[in-house]
Length: 305
Image (cartoon, rainbow, N blue to C red; front, side, top):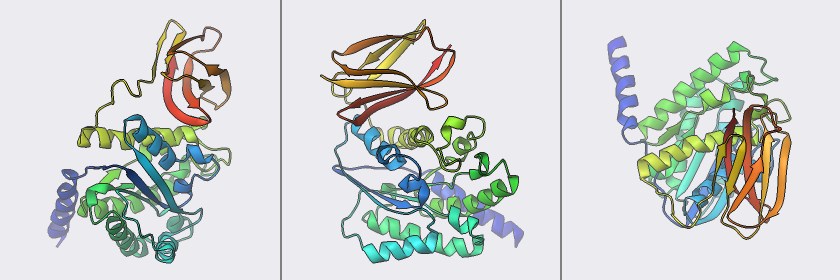
């Protein structure tokens, strides 16, 4: 019996690995299903990871038409299922995300209860994506032990690992893309800027790292190419001289340190290139953010040596 169970688990895992693709058609209509991690508790609307994902896709040349949320802080799997049934979304979405389960754990639920409920939710997500599993993505439950609230409690980490084994196997069984953001979430105590001001939820900077992981799946498996000449944003950093490339008539440049503090701000920048002297800043990690008309158009991590 143990051998059969092991074979089943191995087959379940490997049967999904080769089909974990995210395919996106235009116009992109994103439906984000989840809890506080999806609605972006304690961060601005533009810093939520689905909003940042929509922006990242736009920068790749995709026409993003809609981002809809069915998500709320505190929701368990059963709460999310009730909300979906209540709202009865009629539109067929070509990108549906699912991230749910932390409140099942936090409120004393078991993996035995979580398993069938998550399975039902994933089948619902696939249906909302027009029965196209390649248009669905699942994110692992982040590890809140690595926050000031969690205080490095390994019991929390162990329980989250158990829940993530469940959602990973189910996701792979349905041949849906699985994004493991747990390694990123476990940087929270070592890098405090990755945690929001409430000491529990991810910051916009951590959500940006999640989006980087999602975009790797999209770019590497879908084969998305940069739209040359359309959105050639970027930067170069040589000998503490930062050059920002922004092909816009009017843009604002913001640079934040690893603690989330704004250290440089240049407003109403015109021209394709703008040079900034960073000689007065100490070595470390920084975040470059470009906005135009209050809208996020580019963001990047930088290391100043």
